[in-house]
Image (cartoon, rainbow, N blue to C red; front, side, top):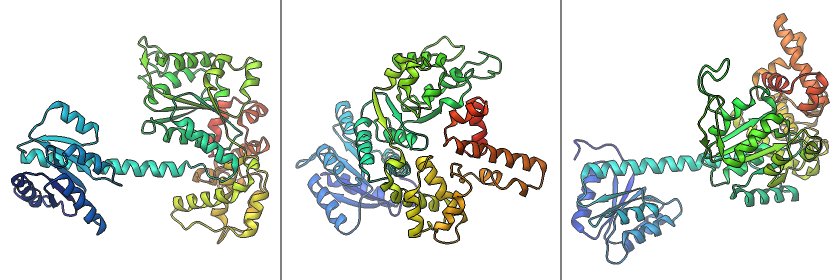
Length: 471
């Protein structure tokens, strides 16, 4: 036994054993260590004690139970405890320990398995580990809940209900999914919903903007490279396919991927194997592939700019995200959701929307879709002095569609009036930001069309947009 209590006040352990001597010994050990201890002489008594304490607003953090007991054995008790809401961790202890029993206990949800006679230090270490695992599991559950709320598909329209139902059905499968829809409709939100609801939801989610990667670097970005494989390859790099192993790879703007890279992506999807640039060893990857595009891939196939075999490989399960103008009834829910999110992020109370402002939001055409609504509300949240009025929104809309993202401080700064600049460099920065913002708005947020009209490579334009917080 240790020399002093370890300060476990507030942590409750239920000890269950039909051997009174062992019950007393464990109770004394745990009480000395600072735990609150309840005891029970059988599985049925243990369940009755849990029910009694629950009725008084108390719960056990861990159950330490024997396996061999007369009326209800420890494995049966484990099953019953696991059925309870927010169940405590269960640690098994038995004088009849064998591998089969241990494996069965862990398979059913026990966190550990100890042998009799219990070694005091082993019991304390196992108990602390079990409590730590339980805490981490709860934190992970809470994190997943927060992430799920962040990437929620908001709206009560028929099209959104249908889409949510499709996502729920598709999530359990590992079939490739192709998400289509206009810019700003929320294709990545759908992809993240698929990931979080899938069996690999605890794994990584790796988003890749295919249009933003220069053609000469896309193979290295996707599959990685070995040190010295080309000029500038000073060290080994892990590619996006490898980084997504055990999770989901989201290939956004897949329609803008160069043809040469499409063939290699197709092979990787079919074989579940990749080879780093400059490498000779094939690496197995287990990933869920979700792709998205705002382009008409069927037309691209006919025009020979997209491979037919890759199109059919990706289009196993097609999902279409409706444009916001197709579901105007969702605008009030979306507005409330975004204002709550903006308020939480800024640490301030969400601003209210005056009725006239909400009515204006209902009538806007939204060429930039949900993204435009969110950005408009972000700007209004910054400039409004109280509740957001119709005049606040009209003032912002006078400067063009709210397609930029006011969330990035540098974007807000650089998109201000250029003549407010104090230096020539600042003037050039602000002017360039305004130029790209206006051109993007003129092309309704379509990056590919904007790049073509400006005579720029899409990858170069994407870098500009990211620099100024416009994408």
